[in-house]
Length: 218
Image 1 (cartoon, rainbow, N blue to C red):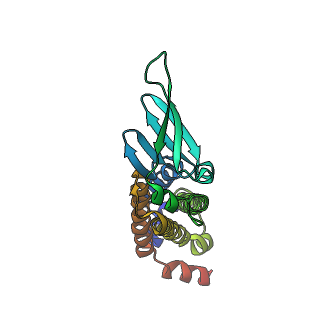
Image 2 (image 1 turned 120 degrees about the vertical axis):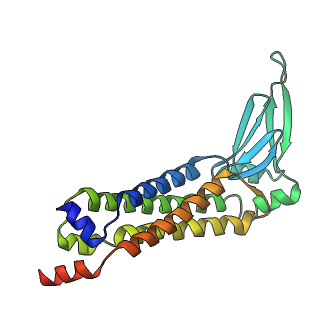
Image 3 (image 1 turned 180 degrees about the vertical axis):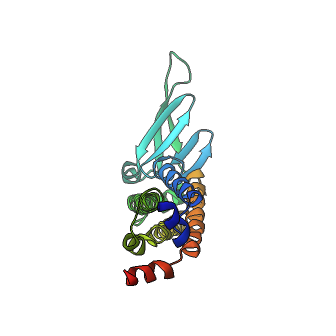
């Protein structure tokens, strides 16, 4: 019965569900990974949505955005172990003064990463909802009435995922376009593009007239 419904009404197929899972995975990594901004490679200085990080000579240091901006020196102070028996305090400057001013502007350091986390979390939630609905329509045994009410929801929620991803990318670029983006930005772009493509393919595949006729008839 479910396979007949799947073919007759154009419900999400296995390929679309797999691509939706890919979108969920990419957004999950973009939300948790630490490479949203890249400031330098020697030492390795980059920033995530929660903290800024420095890696040098097998030593690592991190600082929250709030602490980094409250200091107003726009520097990260870390202890680099050059030799096993010695240690030296090393100051790593994250950009120049004007770069720091941009990072920690009124709408910068304390607000932008927090808003990005909210947008990406909402986008991931919509993608997960789309995947669960598509799995139910594919593997469950929905009635005609459920097909009528739920058939378009996987595409709509996935389109919401893409829109939220676009909003997050535009918001990030609005404030930090002068800096080098890390791989998390590219990951989010990929997730957004895939979400748009799959959502559109779901809409094209969905045959809403037949479920409507069946719903009215019964």
